[in-house]
Image (cartoon, rainbow, N blue to C red):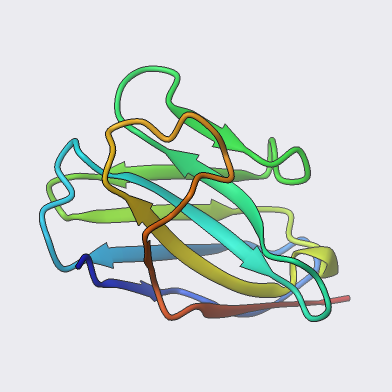
Length: 124
């Protein structure tokens, strides 16, 4: 098990920024692919960003490219999602996810571990 705990969600106005954090209660080291998914009411869950280890190991959904940035601090066992230029379309429950692999290969990877989810609400 890899318990994941998200933090940093909340409510902002259009154009605002938020930074989500996901802390794993285990050493994520270089052996976990980690990412963020989101699910809006009435919609399917979708991958937002994913990060493995090594160069070029970052993936973004087209809808967030240029606005969101995923990063990881292996020394803190934490993954971040910095979100800028938020719009109401970004309103959703955001989930941190991980799988036991150094590589994600794709954005919508088959996650094994999930956080409890955190709400992000963007008002117009």
